Length: 161
Image (cartoon, rainbow, N blue to C red):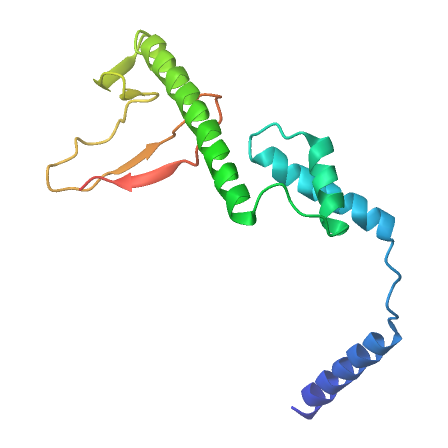
């Protein structure tokens, strides 16, 4: 026990000594500024709208210089929310169109079983070889879901109730 406490004490002393030796580094403001610009650009891109980047930079410069904004903060937030709603509705409409086209085409593929037209289809890749499941049993069912772009969702195991 004494060795453990002594070792712990030595480790703590070494860490404290190491912290004392580390001097604060000078910040490369130009590099940090550019990196911040990249982060802002990625965030703007993720909103799905085409911003006029020259106007974004002008707005940041004007704000930095203390100039008045062309909209109040509340008006800006409302305008962004409205624009994002339009973008999301367009994306949802396009995704629904692609899904409907896929389901229509896929439904005619050999081996596909349609449970609900335009909504749910499945394909049995491998028939089970075990005993027939009794009504009071809860079998393990393994399935894989795929997105329209072919990416697989994580396989899940689900018990039938």
